[in-house]
Image (cartoon, rainbow over all chains, first blue to last red; front, side):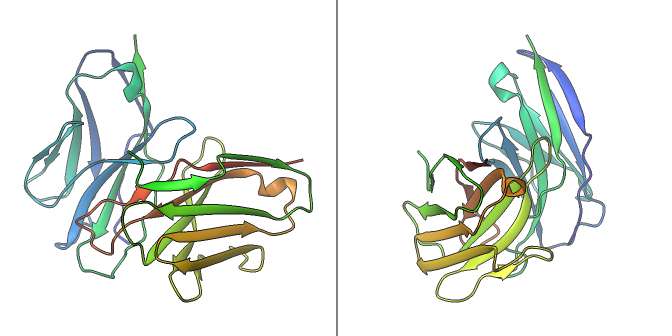
Length: 113
Length: 116
């Protein structure tokens, strides 16, 4: 399985942007980059995903490096409710291959009021 | 709204009891569901892949006779922790989705199991 590397923890001030990095130097051409987050005492929730181009949705933006070996999840204006563990995960686009999600340690994001 | 419903959200029971946890996909059919276990301050650990109409696939080190998985329909998978002991106390989470990796997986809210 292709692996991802994320910082163990990060801190940000409330109402400021947050950039969460993820390295995936062994990514294959058929891997999608997915981000999930887990709030305390809840199951993970989907945040965003992409293949090659940058992506935006109501929750966040995903910036993907041109060589696809790294990506950055961007929260444009962090709130206290964004405090969570953020997981960067690779999922193979080939149907049936690697359907299961293997979680790494993720980045624990602390938001300071 | 939630697309995967997990029940119960919390269970407290005595050692030796068997506990069943249900995972339902609410508005889609899931041929595959996944069961995870999470200990405090740790990441989710995949326990098994639940396959509709066939046997579950267990990850290495997970006892299949201890953690019974049944996936009898396209919207329901159950995990039964048999003869639970205090070391089985954990947060159990299920997920479901399509086989298309261009679509997200949806996770339940988890079941906190406490064995006394």
